[in-house]
Length: 291
Ligand code: SF4
Image (cartoon, rainbow, N blue to C red; front, side, top):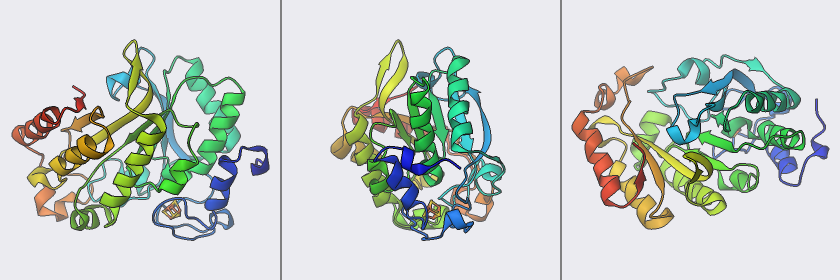
């Protein structure tokens, strides 16, 4: 086990915050280093379900070498429509140490990946942050991507300043009742807005070089049927309160998975019209909308 004392003033508090755990807004208070588990279902050591170059992400993250994607098992949200429920809820993956995580990043860089993309990092951010420091000491130079469901606490995010280059949060819902029903997180809308503002403060609008993202904020928004996501309110928030130049990916690939069948309003795909209306609204409000 690596000694947390060797890391920076930002990383050490993350270790302290992880046991008793208050890393994310759920603030479960469990002793993860003693083997207890909270809502996310993961003890102190992260579980990696897969790692490798990924070409299915937004083109600005892919470049020619792919996005060096590391998928973590477990999640601090309980989305009934989760498309990765075997990873997020069944928690399939292999335990990794800080050292092996750092080696994984360096290997992804070596084979040509244009960034290191941490998928669902919130609940395991302490070892990830330590591994980023270690990997940078050993030559990691490509940007780091924090690819999150967007249920992140500002206190934790502040400690990531300088460690994360690209923030890619979901903005899932604008309405508390819907967030409660679909993700077991009634405070999601406000928590998510605060998190996105902190991310924007740290890294600013998305910047690219030769078509590849180097730094900044890229928001993902999944259109749900029957306007369940509150898309226009989210877009208004970004345009009016975050930055009028925010880059957004309006995603139209929702399909009912996992337990979505038990929720009639989301038990179908969104129509082409529903998706086009949201995309058009984001363009009308001046956001930078990815194709
Ligand atoms: S990271 Fe996990 S254990 Fe910690 S507060 Fe969040 S859900 Fe609970």
